[in-house]
Image 1 (cartoon, rainbow, N blue to C red):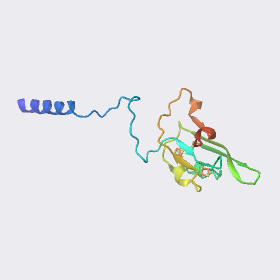
Image 2: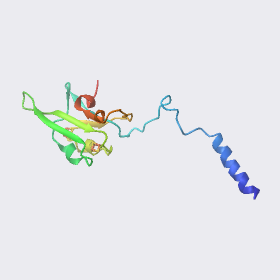
Image 3: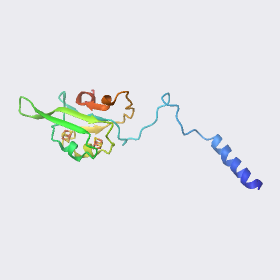
Image 4: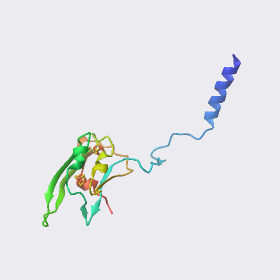
Length: 132
Ligand code: SF4
Ligand code: SF4
């Protein structure tokens, strides 16, 4: 009768002196895994997003949350005139990054995406472009 009681007490005490697994967020920041899939970033090339508006990423996206509209510059090169990701629908699968033929997209370690308004979860091109 007393043995199970002591065993329970031993387990409780052992947890009491262990390093806590919870973090005092936001004072303490969690260590994010190197391959963590957070907010997307559009890579830049010569001050312009590298995206050539090929529409592969919206095609593979299972959540259908990417909107791309192509534009054409003076040299007849295609570029993304509009590029948007609705983060409320994104499931962070990373298929868009894998599908991109010009390596224009990557996923960052940014996980703090809280917002007050629904429309603020739609990340437009200017918000997704990498800042140098
Ligand atoms: S991570 Fe997945 S769900 Fe999110 S935009 Fe890319 S393909 Fe779509
Ligand atoms: S797959 Fe790459 S190049 Fe094509 S639209 Fe998406 S980000 Fe742009």
